[in-house]
Amino acid sequence: MLNWIWTGLLFVSILCACLTGRTEELANAVLSGAQSAVELCFATMGMMCFWTGMMHIAEKGGLTQLLAKVLHPILKHLFPDLKPGSRAAGAICMNLTANFLGLGNAATPLGISAMKELKKCDPKCGDEANRSMVLFVVLNTASLQLIPTYMATIRAKYGAQNPFDLLPAVWITSICALLVAVLSAKLFERRKVRG
Image (cartoon, rainbow, N blue to C red):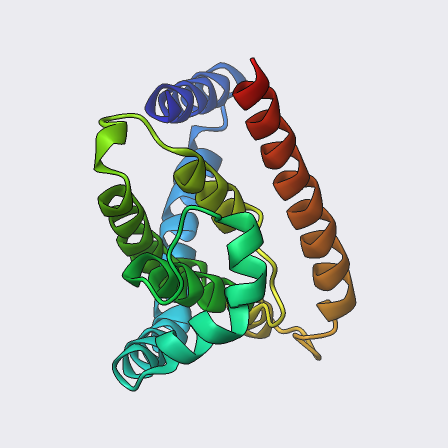
């Protein structure tokens, strides 16, 4: 679906540029946009490599188990099907930690790992997601961000004097989004169980 949307946007842009005689401006925008994208990739690559490496070291160093113990009181209410100290709980904790640090790209492979572990916990669900998987996707999507590292890196690259001055707004919006998402997921879960 997204491919069709992007294709439609590109087609409409080219059509409008041709109809208004602004093809040269469109070509310049495409070239400058491509250059900006490459510069942005290089600006964020160092930060992503550093934090991804730190997350891997933390996992190998036993931080996963420590985080699983610290987050166990919360996780046992959110994921009652999970066993304490399971690999799935550890993978969820690492994903949540990456999201706490605002590392969406580093959280993605950890999220995939967590989904695989959740699938192993309930092999009878087949191709359908069980309630733990659905809730995990909700938590991952509406994640709580304590330090928006990626956003601060982008803001610093584009000249922000204080890239972290958006912290209060990020905290408020991420807490509200997380609460609404988790409450909605739990309400739909109860409704499905009753129905």
